[in-house]
Image (cartoon, rainbow, N blue to C red; front, side, top):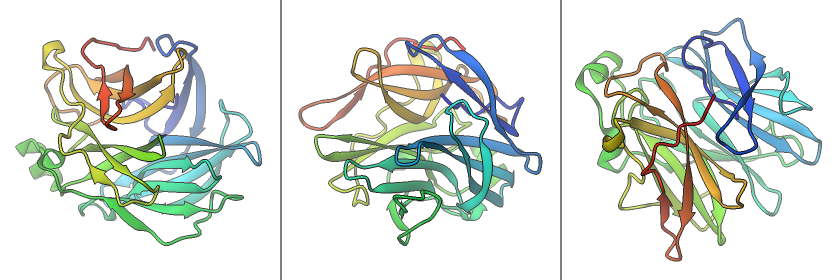
Length: 283
């Protein structure tokens, strides 16, 4: 797992390993940069044709200067060598379909955090996933009220518009499920939703009952978001996401930790996350 830091090591990325998704071992720093203030939202893709691991990272120096870069390594635990900037925006996610086609999802920010932030997709070169081979297509944008739940103070400070971010694709029964987050990551109301499509490039139809995961008031937890889905040791699906343990705003990323919960998709194609218990990972 490649988590974003809690604010103490914002210019470097770490990696942790686990056999049970509960107990994690730190393997050290895998990537760092000296010329940026923050590195976050890493997404690692293994390119089987070449045996190379590609780390897609977000870097920022200000609200107006956010970019996605690429680093590579022959090993999942790094070190990763920087290959430069790929595109403006945040929250990269790379998905390889069963036919070998590779897709790049990210949140667009043409004017930094001061503009609307929809999720878009572009195809990557199947042999060299550092190069685009299609134009961009917006697939998710703000249409549901929960995606724009703001706390007045932070909204006034940042002046941010509605955003959808943290895309992650799960393919199930020939359907493409996109998990995504809405709102501000530091808000108690940050939540997870999903949308479904017959194609990796959309159109994606949002679940009308979104969000699928929001604050667990019974546990005093709030702001769940930016999820990834993995096959767990039992052969099912588990969703990994960050969550806060209080009802206050988080600005620098601190006071967040990792939760792991079971994810299921029923016969009607509805996603369920069994988040009734506190499943904090030991890191």
